[in-house]
Image (cartoon, rainbow, N blue to C red; front, side, top):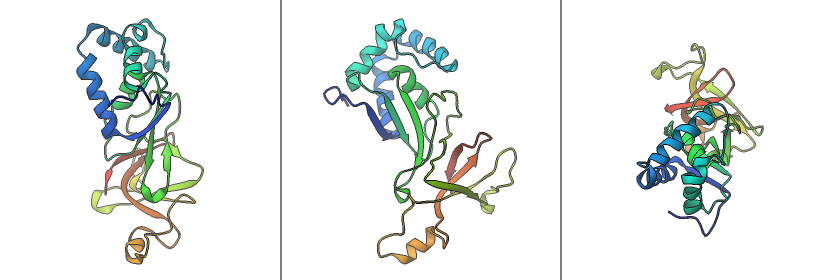
Length: 208
């Protein structure tokens, strides 16, 4: 798990791989005083909405991690949606790798991301996947068996449906499977449960 020769600037991956990166870093550096102290200091910066890459702990420990794992050019990480992403993962990657980290919600049937979190929003709800992209629209549908409704307080909850130019037209030569997930108005039933937060971002809370 060393990318130094490739020196990527952008990585898009599921949290499974990125959690392996986190575990590798923890196993190699996590017990050192400099790592622990530097992590705490940079966490304070992040809580103040400051993503720094030039404090003394970057020079003492974090710069070496960035260089040895990814070649030192990494600028952006996109975490593709999983059932439940580790709430601490994005914060860990921002602190240790000094890079922007975006949360996304996407599925093969949507061709690309449905929602994406914002740059510089370091204190957002960890489970939030951002706001819808301009190419699509989303809505929540009541799920009675899970006691989820669009009238829930403080936030609406339900199954996430999405519609837009990015949504597929159907499964190849399988009209039955297509009709199970795509309605007549082009709404794709994702099978994921979501909650809309007051700032308009989507929080994924599980599967139907």
